[in-house]
Length: 112
Image (cartoon, rainbow, N blue to C red; front, side, top):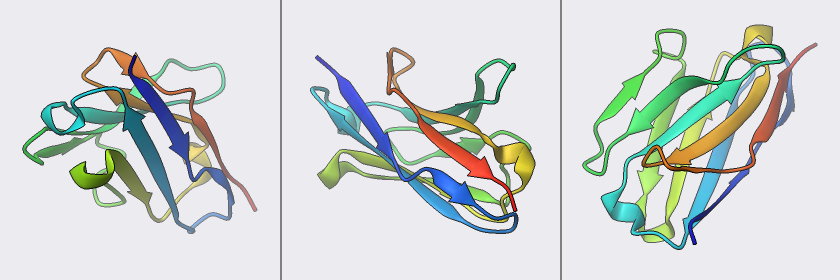
């Protein structure tokens, strides 16, 4: 079955950067769209960014100019580079494949 494993979360100071990774197994990764979502405490899960099988990207407004989604099909991995982080970016970040499969999430905490 499809399995997604996120990594790269942690505690970072405001203005800092993190790079999240998500490794996929059990799927035809290169043929699938990949996305990152996030869920802050007490809030709904929302889309952060998506990358199609062709490499086309789309971002939530709050992520534009600060976050970059990318993929490495040879490694079955999707990345989320996050820069200029603010406390409002604190959330659990989830990897999603083809709107069907989810990872367990990785915690990102932005705090001084």
